[in-house]
Image (cartoon, rainbow, N blue to C red):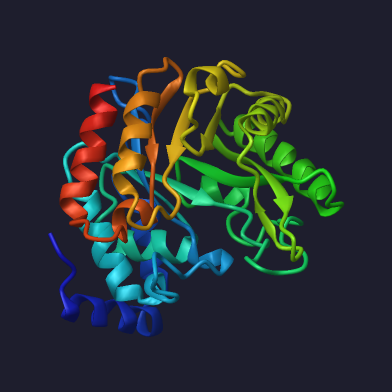
Length: 296
């Protein structure tokens, strides 16, 4: 399944002539339970652009082509074993309007205020969905990004916000998907991912304890070298992200396959790794990942 150019032009026109049709499509879509009977979950991630991440591989603006992004997502969502998508409001509404979210899980991203490269990057505030609109728009949960660098004062506000959102979503019986990541400063002062698995274990432990209830908390983390040790820090279900592997996608697949044998690692939520991987066919790559999830 691909996105017809004529249909995309109709979407552009709908934004002008009938903007309410985008909201209606999302609210009225046919829904399903979040995790299937096997307790696994395979989602596609598409919330990068709302935080200014538009590069993939060697192309600095790859994700900024909206027609191409929607086409890749529609093709990926049509693959057997793919449960849904995690995205910002613009993309979820577009996919729903195009009919791609029927019987699919839809997770709305929440804090996109930590624009990549900004001086305030780790003071990552709510600029997308809030809990009230996750509910009213008929979504299945909300996702927050929690990057922890203990030297950055902005992180305290982000932790407090994620805790509040987790409580609000639990009260609504909706998934709170937290992406806890250890961060550090590079030599030139940029915020970068800390590769330490000890630090990853620490932030997983922190995220698991946020809010007044953890009943609906899911975690989203990078695939670790020692998945058993990292996953042992929590009983919460864990999904693995993909990142931007460039040409090292075989290494990513190998890490996923190993980690998916751990009991509380329940699936994947890759984006650029599969949709924009070098020398990867979208359908074939997504199908391979989905089969890993179902087998794991």
